[in-house]
Length: 99
Image (cartoon, rainbow, N blue to C red; front, top):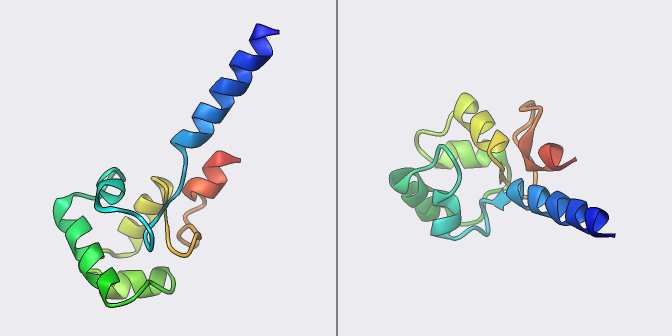
């Protein structure tokens, strides 16, 4: 009985590691926790988000200096989403990693 419970706990913990970080809702600390984002990029994201929520990845990249397709793909692979969607064509993102 202990083994199934332990396996369930490990599976839930692993899934939590791949939890998406939604750019339109994330706090400064949550954004800083995404590998590839540092204090300056997080600050630019928050400043752009103050002007309005990001519609999609194209809008995000257009409004945040320094975020180009290769960077967007890497951030998506690290769990960043825009409107709960991974970067198109990244073949990954948090949703795919959790499956």
